[in-house]
Structures are given as C-alpha cells and as structure tokens.
Amino acid sequence: MAGGHMKYRTLSRNSAHRQALLRNLVTALFKHESITTTWAKAKEAQRLADKLVTLGKRNSEAARNKAKSIFYEPSLLPKLFTTIRDRYATRPGGYTRVLRLEPQREDQSPSAILELVDSPKDTRMALTARTLAYQRSQAAKSGSKNQTPHQPNEVTRGNILKVTRFREDGDEALEEMVRKFEWLDGKREWAEGEKRREEERKWKEDVVVGAEEGGRRGEKKEWERWVVDPAEVERKERVYPKLERTRI
Image 1: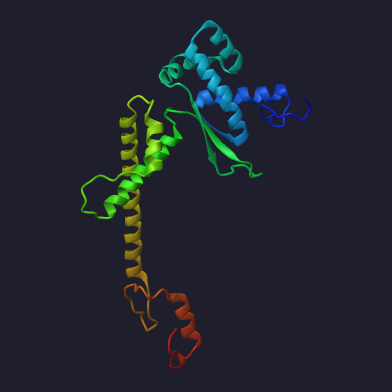
Image 2: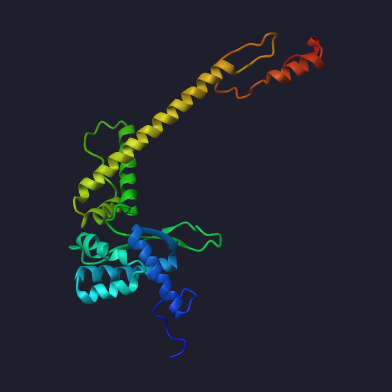
C-alpha cells in the first residue's frame, strides 16, 4: 500500500547503496569496536551488527557463510567467531550501544557513537568511571568526618550495573579505571598548582606599582590589577614636566 509505514530508514539512498553503506559501517565497527557516525546511520547499522553477533554465537557453517557475505574484510571472521563469541556468550542480547554526541558535521546533523558493549573502548564504562572518580574527589575535599564511603546516585548505580553485569571481572576493571582517572586528576591539579605558583612568583618579581625615579617594586594586591608599563613611564617623563605629573 502506497504511503504506508516504513520499516526502516532509507538514509536517502537506494536499496543497493543503503546495503553497501551498512556493510561498510559494521565492518568498521567490528574492526575498531567503536565508530562515530550520524544518529540515523548508527541506528540502522546497530540492527545489522546485532545480527552478526548472533551469527557468531551460533557458530555454524551457514552462519559463517552469512557473515562472510556481510563483511567487506573476511579477515574479521576469526574475530567474530572467537573473541566476540566468547565475550557475549552469557549475554542474552544488546550487544551494541548508540550514544548521542553533539553535532560533528558542518550541517549540524545529529551524531552518535556506535560501539560494541563490554569492549576495551566502552565509552559508557569510561564515563561511569570518570563520574565515580569525580564524586570521590569531591567527597574527600569536603572534609566530612563521616567515615562511611560515598554512595553514588541512582543514575550512576544503574550505569555501574550496565557496564559490569556481563563483563568478566567487571567490578575489578571498573575500579582500575576509576583509579586511573583519580591519578590523572591528581596530576592535573598538581600541574595547575605549579603553574599558578609560578605566575605568582613572576608577578611578585616583575610588577611595577609606582612611577618614581628608579621605579618601586612591590607585591600583588587583591584589589590592584593595573600594571605600569616601564616604556610608557619613560615616554611620559619625556613629554610632561616632573611637577605636572601627580601619578602616571
């Protein structure tokens, strides 16, 4: 019936071009385990990627022939029927994830990340670990005398369950990533502190706060933000008589 509900997105392409595009996307996905594309393309490629993982879990001759007809790179077949199959052996479904991004293209089209869940490049796990590291650092800075550990909120607890439920040694992997983020935050704070202290030291050494003969040096005040340029002082001393100068 003309004008009926469409079962899938055409992606502004004919059938052959659309199928070639999806095959190219899933080939890149299984090669790199995480790709960035438009939202519509990611949602359509997600369906084909989930079917490929299902074929890998079946591990039959018919499944191998079907997967071979989809991949543009046959070298990915061993990875599908060994690494991917073992990774999702206990997972009943949901092998891929689509995460929205800010528009990446010039036309501001919706962008997204398409990734294999529980992979080394799992974006949600990295974001969850980053959140936990930040919350722990804020709890430590608050100086609370309560010795009970910081409890994440409901959303963070849900994300923790998602990234650790079917991952082998998921809790240990998440905790290791949290420690890495805490170490990076510590290094960043140390670098920012060193930069701030160096700027203050240079300010105390080089700021000129007066226009007397020979200049007068002093320390930076919180209320004083102006800096006298020595070249400007010299120019005004040549132009204006000394008696007419009250402050330069």
